[in-house]
Length: 70
Image (tube, rainbow, N blue to C red):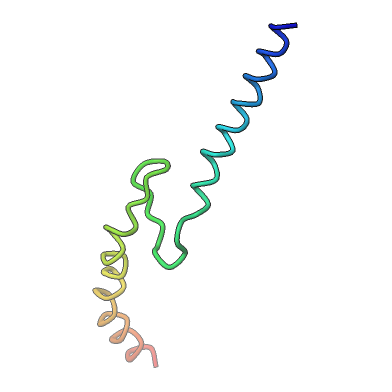
């Protein structure tokens, strides 16, 4: 009886720990772009300002191509 109760308690504790660990992942703020440095480590706050750099750098080239095509 003790071993059965210990097994049930272990399963319940493992399930509760899994749910507690998974609940924090879904709480990311949607306004920052998600840039994952490692699984579970979001570097969006650090790399967020650099996300638009390729678009800003290619904007003049896009303008020239649009003028030539039209």
